[in-house]
Image 1 (tube, rainbow, N blue to C red):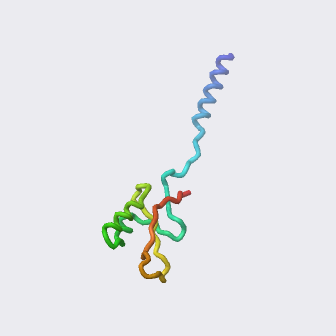
Image 2: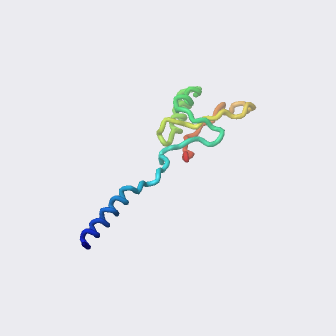
Image 3: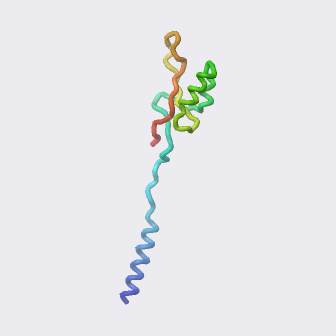
Length: 95
């Protein structure tokens, strides 16, 4: 009788352990942009580059290698010789 009870208890414990699911987690590689920035492809941002050296610097900004950058136009009143757009890697974790 004790053997049957022990076997039944072990079977129930095994089935209960299988029924417990781990909580879902966010993708650890999912990143986005800060508020006010737009998520764009690297090629989109490179399209604004004035020359190939600038294009190389933009491509190098993609530190996490996902092909995406955060892009932002500065306020309309920009001083002469200032950049006409801003970019940075999308490293803000997405929740």
